[in-house]
Length: 399
Image 1 (cartoon, rainbow, N blue to C red):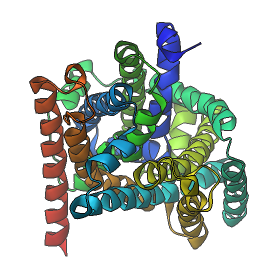
Image 2 (tube, helix red, strand yellow):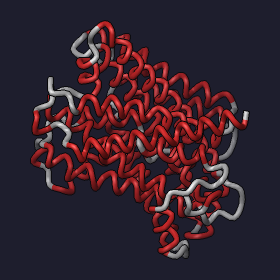
Image 3 (spheres, helix red, strand yellow):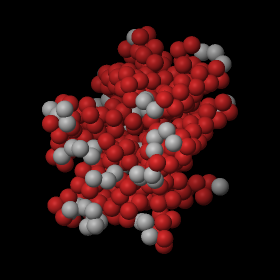
């Protein structure tokens, strides 16, 4: 069955790969810690980033549907002249290093899940998880295991939704938190992290690549609900975090889930955290290789899946995660920092997407952005740049 003939539910499931990709250990860590430290006051960052994800992912998918080229290929064509070639390298290297930062959090998150379940020396599950991830990536067919564990991650999301519903927080309070931007003292890193863990830069390239055969209307009917569901789960995790009475940790979060819903929930959280980390630990290296291929070697056999260049990219990202996993670094600060770094990268990727989606050379007039869409994307870029600059300035001041 071709994607354009899918029923609405099938379309949502097809595009759920995007929401599944951003609900990883980074989302669990950053959202729950935001709730634990600042209550409902940072929900607005998830509201903004969910809406922004819809607009950015729709534009990226529309590029591939209308032009027949994914986002990386379109950027490579737009900046193929010698004077602008550096832009391709900037985008490619930025995404690769962004994936490497995510990978560190993915491995640490997966290992934290096993530690909750079994305890013991974390280096042993790190080596085991890393070996299995590497084997899956080398074989070149990670889809089956990723989809299987993705079901576990979705079920973990339902646990958080149940806790959020039972949280007792007045609806008016969390609605206010969802629509009124506030900046509590010390919340800058978490605010950027909430945006960076939802609007994942490499997801723009991933979503652009999988939507080529769809019609634009069918793509929107599947993509928008799928991202909204992912955003709702992220908000539920934040609200669940407000139930923590002790300092945030994975152990405290698991104990809160056990207290709120039963011992099975804490076990399921450990399984879900492992599954989220493992699936993301496969997706991030794969996405980095696909992005590099589209930017530097589309149609070039030296960049084909399984080629040396292709494998060098994903091995670098995979090895970075392994290095951090074996280093003994504390997982929660590392995961939050990874999300914040990608939040700083986001506006630059969004600028190049904005340029591509308006380029008449390969975007038909009916598929190019209209003025309202350009205004929204420009606003998204401006807000993410402003938040990033604010956070950077506070960091400089603290130094």
